[in-house]
Amino acid sequence: MRRAAIALAITAVALAGCKRQKPPAMTRVWLGAYHGCATVKSGGLECWGANDAGQLGDGTKTQSLFPVRVTASPGAPEELAIGARHTCGLYAKQIRCWGDDSRHQLAAPTGATFTVIAAAGDRTCTLGALGVPQCWGDGHEALATPDGLMRSASLLAVGPGRVCAAFVAPTHDVRCNGSDDRGQSAGQKPVLVGASIKGLAAGGQHTCALLEDGSVQCWGDNALGQLGDGSTTGSAAPVLVHGLPAAVEIRANDRTTCARLWNNTVACWGANDFHQLANGTTEASARPQPLSGLVGAIELSLGGEGACARLAEGGARCWGRNQAGQMGDGSTADHDVPMPVRSPLAKK
Image (cartoon, rainbow, N blue to C red; front, top):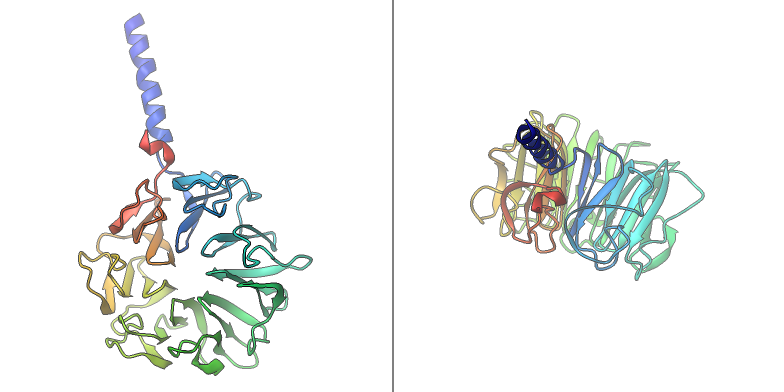
């Protein structure tokens, strides 16, 4: 009897240990160029990857290949923005930032309420109560509205060297401010005038918009097919992504674009040298490529040369470049297929 009781006790402990090793259920996921973050069902925020400037917010500057709890975060943020070496969260319409401040990345505004936040590189931007885009960082401590964007916006996207916003009044259109060497800002001229925009994504040198009918149009650099029109010719005017079923979410990283489709699958196009398309090759594609085996995706996030999808089952899977451990699975090897973000207990 005693041996049986001991055996049962050992089995119970082992099962409990297995249960603890399961990754926490995620309620949101974000991926930057070198680190990623997720809110978890149990409450709070967890991040992983590079941490040389304290961007993981765990009180250290130690890289973590697994998710760690963010002590700098007062609970779970409503929204998160991940820059190159800093992180900013939106909490009850207030902004809190942590990480690198060498270019005033942490100079977040105070004394007002905010509804949207986005970041890229050393810059972060937000929409205030009136919806007008405001930015800080990138060497500028003072809050400023980019030229040409002094209107109430509904959507915001930040890419390296530029800010794009979708407007609804007095007309529906999209405008970008910043670098225009590849046509990605269209010279601050309005694009997609009259179209109803549901999503906006800024890549390294290209921008994409998700329209109300589920179609996607992109403009800017297209050297690796990241505009998705079947060519590698850049365009300052929006071009339609060819062969894409109705999309419900659009995201972009440096040289790749991905869309979450109506049936919660994912398709990507553009660069593939770090397996950004997860299609078994390293060849770029100028047309959307479905991610085989990835189903039940309910959220998508792209950054750097990688991507993550949060799944209906509660976890997240990531693929692409992983030199800083931004895939969150305990390795620094690039992922040619979507791999699950893992709990740190999974290494034991």
